[in-house]
Image 1 (cartoon, rainbow, N blue to C red):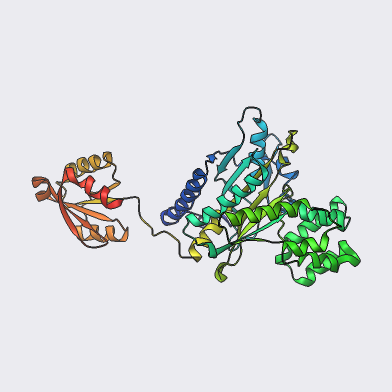
Image 2 (cartoon, rainbow, N blue to C red):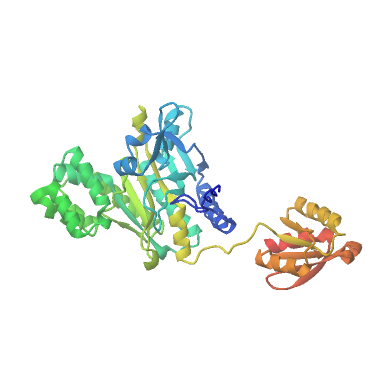
Length: 438
């Protein structure tokens, strides 16, 4: 007896998603807000392949991502290729490739899908879409301010209130000064500390202290005391040498003051904020959800002035951020901001009997030409079944066509939400429904 082949599973690959129409509706809503916000600031959309040479990420992306989280393989030409885990190295490569032709400052955005092999959990999947906004070649202070403003406005455009989230800000120059000038660490140990700080929220106090002890030894308590500073003045008092002004503190103080002048009341200094990527050179920020049901970092970004130098180009001022669709959806769902599902249909036309097929097809095409999205049903199912289907599909308006309607040219359109009916001639249908849909 020939054994039956095992059935293929219907589950998607672990850590990725299928988007059914209701899911795609929300996904499109999220991406529409992203595009609308970026374009309101004058940003232009760009794109690139999901495949990049693996070496692109080894120079500046964090070691954890490169060594443990990338999808990398050898192609048929023995070239090492990676499915992009982030977009910043790609945009830097593209800018470096045509630097002499481009007109600066550049304001670019993209919505790529990104891949990381990590444990799927709330807010993290192995594939996600991300809104990236970057500015190249603009004044450093102004571009820092603009990038944070754009990130904040994105959440406000979803319908969020200022007190739904907070913006934590730091400057890599501050920690660089602390590690090099105060604790006199070499480059390798300074990098180890930066990554340790970035993981601090995921560690117990003892675990953090033990790892810090391996680097700072007898000065561990002094280092932890600096990290526990609650504001800029305390940090300054703990690390200043005489009257020396620390560049990073000056920059972040000016940035916070400028945000306050703009009416931003939820931005704060955070001494432990580092961001995991090695390419950040100055300001870094993260936006946090304050709701207890989703209390976590949503997204962030910062300044990366040196990234073009890996391509042999001169350094150029650059700043940007990335906001993932998974955390975006968690945020708007937590705060009751999900849009109500609406199918891609303005009018459902159902026939009574088979004689109306021709008139319905003509009417449907005419209404589509006038801008309506029309679903026509000329099947032989009972009209009661067709109405039930229209209700389940959430079609907003229904028009039933029988012999009388075809003969008189007058139709009744039913609003499925209110139950109200209106009567009109076929040349009036589009105008009435287009007004109702606005």
